[in-house]
Image (cartoon, rainbow, N blue to C red; front, side):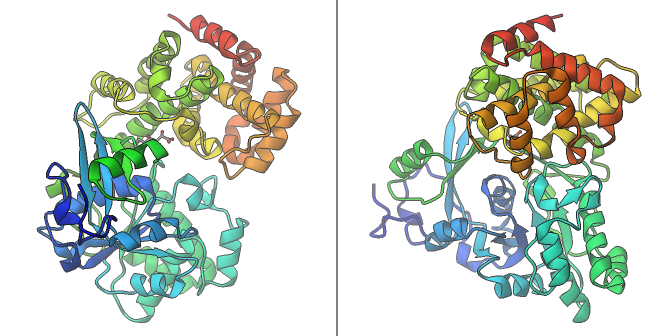
Length: 492
Ligand code: CS2
């Protein structure tokens, strides 16, 4: 089946797609941009853009301008397709859906004036972000003013590079022109994401112009949100499958599980889309939701990623088929993580954990452990170390919780010895530590614990150091047999 004469997905070819393909219920060209989204990667396109796609038929004024800060790859792939792309939904049945909500894609590095103009456009009432943990340029709770992008932006705030720099440049123009600010909505996997972003923005603005910082403090809302949908990276197998099923070429299709959740704090300083009409939950307190998701789902994911990689497993599905590993992670969630979380009234820990385990076992998904292992230095603090900190304070056991952290240390050492660079902003430091590892728990673990950006004050807690060294030693050579043995030792 061909898509007209173009052979490339586009508005023109929509009508000739196979009947089973779900397509926009509106004319994409008739929509208007109301949201600027920074970080137009696969997660955004599989999650937020789909909620907005559901909304545009009713509310055409909320289309998205997607901004990539550094790379033009997404824009180069999707602009020739009129911003359209295909989403493969992976559940008991698979479904193909063409998404039309991203009407413009800009690469900030190459099209800075256009990005700044969008941020100053009064029709834009909301700026959303998925820039991953490292995009916030934080050192602990504060903005890292020594971060090269932040240092650059503070010296040249009119021509920023960082997301924080762009947010403030846009707000500065709006203040100067007497316009309303936009709401800034973080959609990243960080606890208290809105509060953290607000603090970073205010600290940055304070350096640029203290009166601007006061204005932002008084006028701009930074709601928190919790986002959830498992989104394996696009690979050649997906591209081939989509092109065959679509009958034409999509340069960058994406995939995700059918399940999706978005909980948004209802605190906006400008108009907002009626998110509740398209399945998002509006709430006044999302802390319980984000703790549950980060600590249970993401904590378990990172545990599977590092322990499973040491066991030479490839995907989450493979890891869930190893009874020792799956059993360990399940017990970790039920006995070590869940009891320390205060859940929202509508959630039950056991039901939530059952659902997570079923999602991890979804046979339609191949989610690589190596993808989840990215950015360990940024993810572990929010996913596992926060639980360890609470357990230490409450005098609870931390031995099982330390095993995945020790597995990460062994993983870093292994990758360094194999000459494989980590996808991690601390790659250089981590690789140097990894190369110097001798296998002796004391020296190796202490070298990692000196990473203040990862461990912070936890590093000085004697009980933590001891438990971590014991876990590291328990993993032995960190090959499949000793790792399985270490997991079995936790079998209740
Ligand atoms: C995963 C997440 O890659 C990872 O680190 O743990 O992307 C996870 O799939 C999502 O947070 C699920 O919502």
